[in-house]
Length: 126
Image: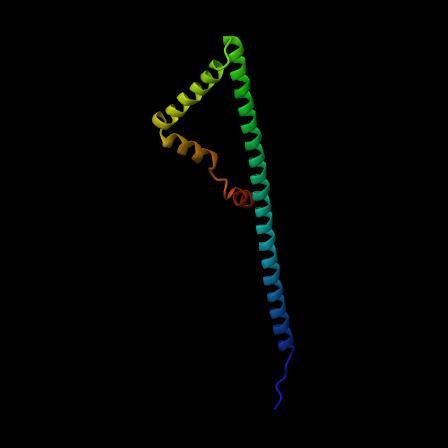
């Protein structure tokens, strides 16, 4: 005896194909989101490295300039660099002994507050 089909096999095949298509599309969307986040992190890292390098070089040359300027004003060949070095030694002692790490922890908390999931929160509010 043959049972009447009434198109149920075709409907279930369509349903499975639609479900597989949905899963494939969802995986592609997740891959694209991960790719975008990695690209943003890469660009941000390169930007931060270049800014840090430029700031470091600026600091070095400004300190050399100050040392030479103080040498000229003091009519000496070494006291200007000694004064600049003494300033940084005092700054180092203050940072090592006098400043608590909690100050920097509070600054980091304020700086990085809600940055990890900022995009997710923004999308929910739209």
